[in-house]
Structure formats: C-alpha cells, structure tokens
Amino acid sequence: MFPRAGAAVPYSPAPTVWWRQDDGGVDEAPAPTTTTGRVAFASLVVFTGILLLSPQIWLPILGSLRIALLAAGLAIAAHLLQRLADHQPTPFATEVVLAVLLVCWAVITVPVSYWPGGSVNVLTDHYLKAVVFFWLIGALVATTSRLRVFAWTLVVCSIPLAATALNNYVSGVFLSTRVPGVHRIYGYYGGSGIAGNPNDLALMLNLVIPMAAVMMMSARSATGRWLAAATLVLDAAAVVVTFSRAGFLTLATTLVLFVFWLVRRRAAGTAAVLLLAGLFALPYLPRGYADRLSTITDMAADRTGSAAGRWNDYQVALGVVAHNPIIGVGIGQDVLAMNEYRGVSDWISVHNAFLQYAVDLGVPGLLLFLWLYVMCLRSARAVERRSAREPALGDLAHLAAGVQIALVAFGVAAFFHPIAYQFYFFSIGGMAVALKRAYVTASQAAAPAESQAS
Image (cartoon, rainbow, N blue to C red; front, side, top):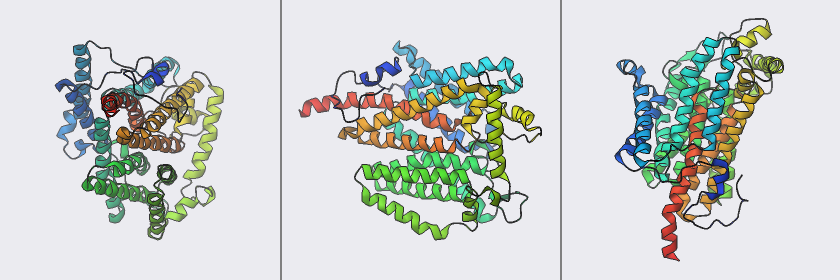
C-alpha cells in the first residue's frame, strides 16, 4: 500500500502520490478557510462535545431542541455548500468507501434479519450516525491545526467523564451487582450518552488517553502540557475505579505502546519516568482491584459469573456464525439469535465487536470491518513515519502516533465490548482519515519554506 519505511520522500506539488492508488479520490486541496468551512468545522466540534458530555441531561430543554441533530446538520450543510461553492466533488477516501459498503451490506441483510424492524432501528439510531460522523471528521479535520483542536476537544471533554467516575467511587455511587462485596460504579451521570455504564466509560477514556499523552508531548505552552498531563492521570485513575477488566487490559496496552513510542523517539528517560510512576501507583490501587483482575485468567473466581458467561457466549456466537456464515442474522440481532441457540432468553449481546459483525452481518461483514480497521491503522502509521522524518511536521507526527495507539487500544477493547455500531471506533478512525489530508496540506505549506532554505 505504502512505499517502504525509510525511503526518501522529496517535496512535490502533489505529495499524495504515495497513497493515490489506494484512495483514488482523496482530495488534495487544503481544508477550506472560508466562513462556511469554519462553520462546518466548528459545528463538528460542538457535536463532538455534545456526543461525549450529553448536556441535555443537565438542561432537559436541550433535549427537545435536538441540539446534536442541529450541530450535525449544520456541519453537513455547511460542508456541502462549501464544496458546491468551490465546484469540487465531496472527497471520499477508501476508508469512507469501506464504511459505506458496510452500511450497504447491512441494508441488504435487513429483509432476512431475525427482526427487520429492529435492524432498521439499529441502522438509523446508531450506525448511520456513526458513519456520517466518521466521514465528517475525515472531510473537515483536514489540517494539523484542526487535528489539534479536535484532539484537545476529546481531551477536555474527557475531564467531566473521569471526574464523574472518581466522584461516584469516592461517594459510593455503585451499581447493584447482587453479589456481596462486589461494587461497580455508575457510569456518566446515571447511564447517559456513550459513557453510560462503567465499561463504556472506561472504553471512552482509554481512547482519549493516547491523545492526552501526545498533546502533553507536543503542547506549545506549559499550561497546555500540565493540562494534558493532569487529564492523562485523571483519565487513567478513572479507568481503574470502573473496575473494568477490559479497561485494564486496554490501559496496559496503551502504556506499553506509548513507552515503545517514546523509546523509538529517543526519549527513554521519559519512558522510564512513566514506568516508575506506574509502579509507584500500584500500592494505591482500590481495594479488591487485584482480585477483580485475577478473574481475567481464573474465571471460576469471578463471583458475578460474568467472565464465564461471556466465554460461553463467545462459543454460542461462533455456532451462530457457522450456521449463518454469509448473510448473518441481521444488524443488531445477535441477542435474538443467541437466545435461540442458547435455548434460554438471557437478552445479552455478545461482548466482542468482531463477533458482533460476524454474527449480524456474516463473514463478509466481518471482513469489511477488518479491512476498514486495518486501512485506518496503516494510514495513521504511514503519516506518522513520514511526518517524523520532516522537522516541520513534528506536531502531525505526534498526532498520528496518538491515533495509532488509540486504534490499537480499540482493537484490544473490541474483544470485550459489544460496541460494533457505536461511535467509539468511528471517532478515532475518522482522525486516521483526516491525517492523510492534513499531511497533504502540511507538506504543501512546508514545500516553499524548504525551497527557500535550499
């Protein structure tokens, strides 16, 4: 897909050649700086904040105003108007095409779904919105400065999420587990938004932590560095108090990847400090946390029965796939299909996003999603490698590294969460698409300076 690592990449008027074969329609023009373009981007940022923070739970009147729909609609309308004014087609990268193909395949499966009406609801209530969000990020967050703003939006919005988690833990606001001595905190403000339960809260924070880490490394002021560092610590602590086993595995993966990235960037001292900080934090882990983690390998020790139940569900899901390998059971219908194959009505979705795709959309759906995921990961990796070799693109290299780590973190978390059709992947995957356009824009801006210097 990309030229070999380490190959020289001279500046040129059309620096997208190295991925042109894959993207075939990637827009090489810089992001619009007109009023319409700024309105579209600002609306996207507002929508992202609404998505994470759900302000309508504080001010119910905002719910009746449909503020999320208004922000998203304004972003789409302003972007399309801008493209029409510029007489340019709307760009669709390969990743966006793959996402659209996934939606089309999901639509094809609706007539044979276990519950066609339920599948339509999943498409319209969740999946289509997530894919549109993915497309908007790739289309609008198309410069390094915009990527920084978007990353800071995620970082700052994670602060209330983490603060709520810690407050719930300290205040004893726990879910009822029906098992004496086993406590799990409530999610963000009583189950609202995409961080409504402790597992989803841990997942969202884990996706933001890599962005906080790279913003800490690339912040242009001491205030920015300290804010990012404080958010990083706050988010990590919040992941711990969720007592999410998947959250711990994802957090550990992020730590290892970030340490390797620091070492590769010849910042071994910072990596050592980070590891020591992690070791010093061990004595302060919440009571019962180690016991909770031990159930990852010793399922019999899990008094809630969730570990063994999920393992059994994985096997049931594989049986469903074996009986419906091509068309699946319909998007969002893994619960109904698994109830049938279990012989009991547990009404629990398989806690594995990859198996969700395989059960609901068959092997073709799973392969399409894996293709999309790998394309996003490779794009972020390619931008990080190339930007790291160009001093003028240092900020972009940091951002690309953060997106890479977040994508890998999602890949780990996806083995334990039923979040196939939610916003989690598409928010980070959209940034991977945006990185490519940002690289084009930054290279074009850096080329004249390079020419003058030579």
